[in-house]
Length: 409
Image 1 (cartoon, rainbow, N blue to C red):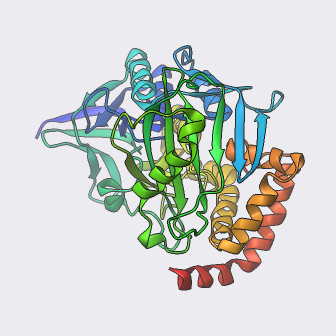
Image 2 (image 1 turned 90 degrees about the vertical axis):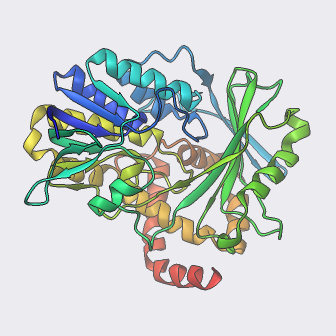
Image 3 (image 1 turned 90 degrees about the horizontal axis):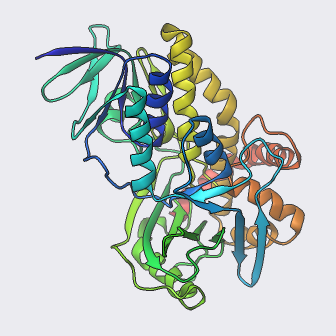
């Protein structure tokens, strides 16, 4: 079988893989990206870009003129509505955006190719192991590629994750979501809308939310997401849930019929391992998804840029340094989110919590920062203080919450 050589081999051409490819190639590394799908493939997603994601794209020098600008978030909880603007003096961009993934991902991969990365479409890559079981590159059906670092950017765990022991932690919560598109005369609005009070056909509150994301192109992205900690999760029908949400807001948004069949996907919110000898996992493949909103594009972009920067500085130490920095930046915050998901899996607690989440302007501002992915371990301010206090309390209650959740399922 023929052998090729590159500095960085990347499996997966989503935002995380593209960010790593762009940054590494611009820094002079020889980069090869392996993507099993066709060029221009779509990825099932809510299409929303937080101010954090916009800031990351700006760091990558990506032109966002084709994206629809978003200035804030409308939160709906029963009869309560709050419209909140993104913070204008924070660490990230002053605005978000909606950019359908078929366009965002294509734009990013063009940028990667322009930076010098080689993109191999319709090419399924799997880790190539050396005699000591370290990863020494990527194997395809026809070729072996030796590399100094292999980056796993494959999204939700699958074949590659199983080969590396990087599956989702089975005892941790995960999410599911479903989305479609519909026409709406309100397609050019500059607020995302999130309905926090979803219910299943049995009138059980859903720990999750429904969304309407205006795309600015005549359509809106409509979807719902839920956490695995809910009562009756195994019987949850996502198609019924999105239809119920569509019926709830159809008249207000003057929605047309679905423009395509609703499509669902899983949201991994943990990982057993995100690095090893010769490899790292980034983005969704590393479990970098906020359990409190299901968002991960911004984390994918950040983790991709980080691993590229580390490689350009010191290839040999990249996996261990990457794991340490990601842990310092995200682990505590994501742990809080997973613990919180157990708490709101209780219907009574969820109902009370939703009233609190939008009940006052101060609490709503904290909710905005959580929904906008504007917090992590290094963030300061009132919201971070609240999360630290909550994490300590939830840590004490976690054993009881896990046992209770197990009984409810």
